[in-house]
Image (cartoon, rainbow, N blue to C red):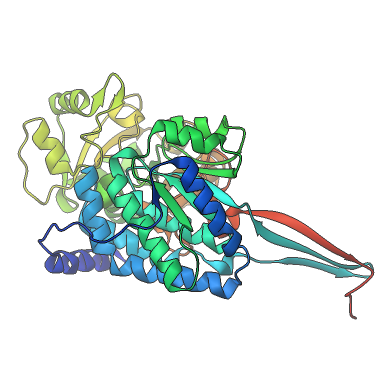
Length: 464
């Protein structure tokens, strides 16, 4: 899927033109939704007995239906997500649903390894865990659920979700769509389950339940730590604070465009999005000029920076009312009125500035000046905070790119493109919304949710 920024803008305009104004909630019975976590796990266990016996072709039929239903309901899911959480924007969320429907791996990701020789045949097969427990975020609620479900079902698992409490309606509608897709393909109900009222307590029940052998957590550092302390196998997709480094060899005009496009996509909600910039001094003024004159950025004064700090940060962390809001709204919160074309707030600051060192998930982009590439690399590594999640670089110097890649050591490194290229949006590769940097799986897919099993036939089935 070759997508450039103009295509993105054209799609957004088309979506906005066709968006319905009604605010009707989805009607009908929701499938796979339970009052009690133990009941949900029991139902998913029964469904898994069926799924594990289904052929790959039969599982793929379910997945094809999930893809189709995701596309058909992309606008509804996007609108529900924005209305329920107050985060992001509808056109970009539509694009994210379309992307996951098209580029999330299915059964083709489940492959067999084989050794054949004088002593027979040995196979390495990918088998299911059984019932997977999954914790999902408020930032990408339906996207994470649908993407995870495709991979987990492809691997022969079923899944019980404990969604973020502030995204229940959107999450459970996605779960119901997954079960509709299964039933229509001749599969069982409850291939995906959720709770009507998920809580921290229900999450704890899930993590300790004897029938849950694998837990996939997508969220902040706290939830990942809890999963890793559960005694179960855990896949942890935690925090990041992705820096974008720009050196003197970069195409500065393109770098400005790519960085702002990535930073502002869905109001900076993606965990891979550019959260701050480190630029070498010789090109920093040029970079900021392009951002201000061509990319719809607003330069915040020192006074405005202080007001933003007081508004978006609290003693307990991020002000959740500010997360995923657009730049105009954020500026309005501090009494600054700007035109509609302003989409990003920028300023120059030291790396320790709270709006730079903190992962905000807002289109606020602090820019740190570095004296040279070595200084820029050191500052970018510090700002990533050892999360090993995502980072970006704009450079035409292959040696600089290589050194940066080794120093930053992240699961994702995007070169000379917006951050969303890492998810297959204008770049090669598959889509995922669970990036397990902390536990080492990286970008998760169907094979991530499998156990490897060795099957050995000694002195037979070697035909040469």
